[in-house]
Image (tube, rainbow, N blue to C red):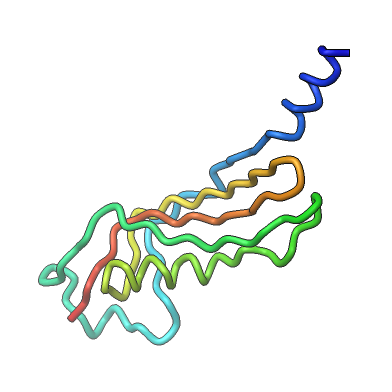
Length: 112
C-alpha cells in the first residue's frame, strides 16, 4: 500500500520542459531593419520573457502565447528586435493545479 501511495505522489508531482526551438532573429511587424544601423545599436543579453496559463484539475485554462512572451522580453530589454533566441515550453502540475509556460530568452537590440 505504501508503494502505491508513493507512486501516486510521484505521478501527481511531475512536470515537463522541452526546447521548442532556436531562432536567429525575431522582428515584430512594423519594424524595418533597413532604416536602422545595427552596428550602432545597444544590445542587452540574456533577456527573458514568459507567458503562463494555469491548469486546474488537469484541464488547461487557456494556452500560453508565443507573441506575448516575445513582447514581454522586448519590454524588459527596452528594444525592438530579439536575436539568438531560445524558446522553451514547460508544463508543471501538482495534485490539483499546475501551469503551462512559454519562455523566450535572447539578446534584445535597441535600434534607437
